[in-house]
Each structure stands twice: as structure tokens, then as C-alpha cells.
Amino acid sequence: MERLPTRLWTDALIRRAQISGAAAYVLQHGDDERGDVLLKIARLDGTAAIYAPSMDMDGERIFLNLAMQGVGPDEASVDEYVQRARARDRDLWIVEIEDREGRHFLTEKVES
Figure 1 (tube, helix red, strand yellow):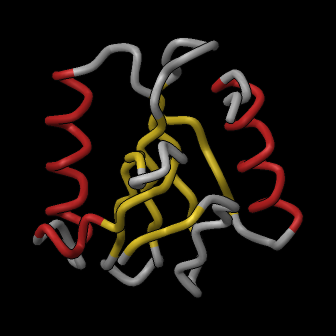
Figure 2 (figure 1 turned 30 degrees about the horizontal axis):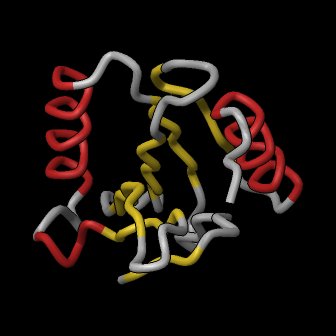
């Protein structure tokens, strides 16, 4: 399946979050066409989650909740992961959503 340009996909994600009453921000602007997106969900209570893109067995884009790899739920460990990811990949988009309910607003499959 053809992927949308990252900038368009990111704009749509932010819009879905805002329409639902959450705040969403681009923390790092990556490559407009093909950059991957790291998604941080801040629950505004000192906890957070981080979602990273991956591929399933059918080649479809999915997102992995990195809690299963020991990242989070404390926001400090999520922020440390984000900083390491920023240093590794300058084409990476980093989007933060602030939502007390912890909603990610992804339309892709999410594995927890």
C-alpha cells in the first residue's frame, strides 16, 4: 500500500487529536516525504507512552507501543528515549500529543 507523504500524514494526526480536544505538537520536523514518526503521548500526570513505526508480516505499517520494551510509563524515560532517537535520525518526525486519557489517535494498527 502506498504511504502518504509524512507531512500530510502528520498534519492529519494532529488534526484528529485537536478535533477530539487534545493538544498536539511537532517537536521535530523530519523529512516531508518519507520520514518516520515517533509519537509521544503525555498524560499530563507524569506518565507517558511512546509509539514507533514498524511493519507487520504483510508489509503494512503498524505502530508499536514501546512499553513492551520497557520504555515508560514514567515521562522521564520516554523523554530519554526521544532524545536518543533524535540523535540517531535527523529525518525523524517527533509528535507529542497531550491527552489525559492517553489516546494516540492513530488509524494504523497498534501493537501493545
